[in-house]
Length: 477
Image 1 (cartoon, rainbow, N blue to C red):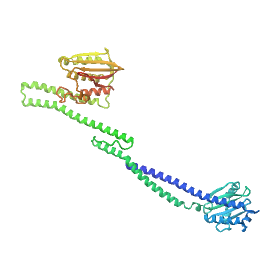
Image 2 (image 1 turned 90 degrees about the vertical axis):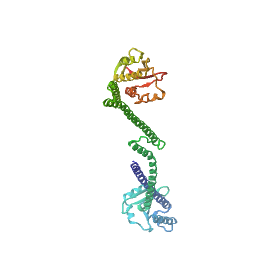
Image 3 (image 1 turned 120 degrees about the horizontal axis):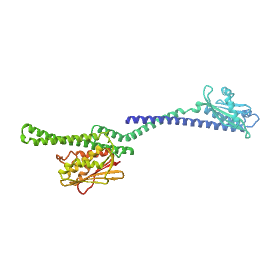
Image 4 (image 1 turned 90 degrees about the horizontal axis):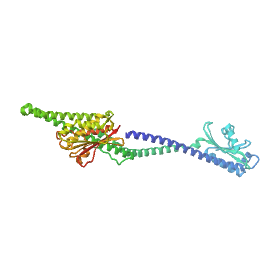
């Protein structure tokens, strides 16, 4: 991933550098051409000034007059410009008379003179007589040329023009050197940018590489890995924090899974060991025949316990399926509480437990899965019976608040110690740490919690001075 990102970034830098270098090259090229043309233009203006100050009826005769000091200076200046730029200079009056200067002063250039008859020069001459200053590039002939033209005036009136023409190569010379400088500078910028981007991207990618390594470690089953949450951009720090939170939760899930397997193994091993021991004892004759009915009853009890454990595990497994949904219906939860008491009447009478039903209203219709809620009620009532001593009391309550029905099951038992309160809904957790036979599997409250979660409702342990009280909520119909 790091190599791909670097390749993309370097490609963008290269493309940007090439574009900027091209723009820079064109800018420098145009600036140099404009600067040289500006210089030629200033020389043409000075020549035009001198030509405008020559006296005489015929400009050409005046220029050819070798006794004229102005003519002498004009010739020297024209010769200098002609030699410097390998240029052709012509001074033309409004009557079309002209004088051409080149490196061999006073020798007319035939090709240039013929070019003066072109439509391009004719149009330029008209513009100059109108007071304009022109500069143009011509592609005609063997080599492209640049031409500048300015008017010369006599008495504030444009009476002629001065043209300076030189080969384009003369104006554009030296651009190759500029190009190489631009290329060299662009290469240096590209290398420096590549180094800076490499260091920058590597620094920014470091947290991502750590996350990638940590993810690979998790994929191998190690959920203890953590990443640094204090490096990188705020987004990366948030991602690292979320990743660490995920690993901690995964570690908790893995710990829970291992505990679940261990607890299931323990719970299954206990009744199976008892059943096997009693069966082998009776088969080997270790247990006398007259005592066998008693031990057969123990085998039946352990088998029942084993069957109950398997049923609870299957019930919890079905409840935790992704497609598990409650089958909603409307029923009277008060009637369900009364029916649960009637079903458990034998157990209640055996322990001489008094049952009190305190209902806010005689009927409390709710909308829920009646079979699942009956399972919750039965589990809570069984727990209350189990932990309530003889002669104790169990209270069933129902009340309504803001469209929600609150059902409470209270007992007068020994209650739940504070250190167990947060674990009471965990799988296989029982208040008696030794998992004493007959005390249950520790899955009942886990099943109740899952059923209430499926309904979008809650179940919780209430704070009480004595005994234990569980309250769950349902949507009123």
